[in-house]
Image (cartoon, rainbow, N blue to C red):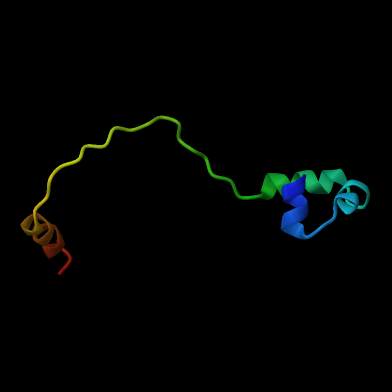
Length: 61
């Protein structure tokens, strides 16, 4: 509740007594969120030379 008050600049009394809780719930539902993919994917690191980078960038010229 503190984050809601901070975000909108409201006091706790205003949030609790002046704003309809259904409206606050809709605001929370519409808030952007980040879906974190819990499955860790293995990253294959390869060593690259400057020549390899030049070859990759050639296709964009």
